[in-house]
Length: 240
Image (tube, rainbow, N blue to C red):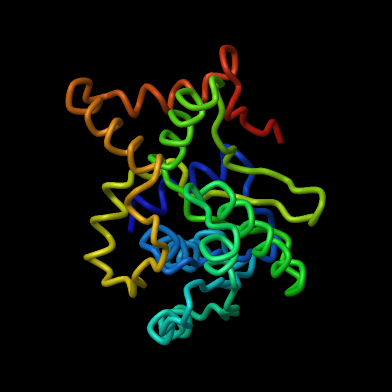
């Protein structure tokens, strides 16, 4: 976990993600990224001398409620309370709207629900488990399909809900997440989404892997471009 905590500390320092007294919601999907984030932030409390609190929040989808007992046991083990809500996202996206490319809408709706739940629980920050490759894939999708340079920012204040979304693992390579998934035996849930593995993001993942074979340092260069304030400013660091 040393590498993970180092990346989180770096992101926290660069973007002033967590302040003393913050009440941080950790969005848990049941996937490897969010579960690693949950465990890592539980440890990061020690680094920050317990000056912030954590509360895991989870939105489940699918026609049937999944078995979340293993995730609940993990939360008990690391002393983080968890709130789980079952949603009708599956029915809305695939049965009512019949979306063929549901990812963008699904992400927007989930983020809104997570922010609303954060408000309900009195939490002012929402931590999401996006890692380095998520940011780079989003940048590539924006360039190829939208004709613009854009990706999510590591820290974003949402005025409608008065919640700040943070992405503490944004510097962490996905390969490290995959390694820790096995090492830590994370209780991963099967993704119930019918589009899983057949999305534009998956195409970008394959394209990025192909580029990396030819240009081994391409990911580091893309990350550097995001941080280059003079040229792009997509990831302009907080000056505080």
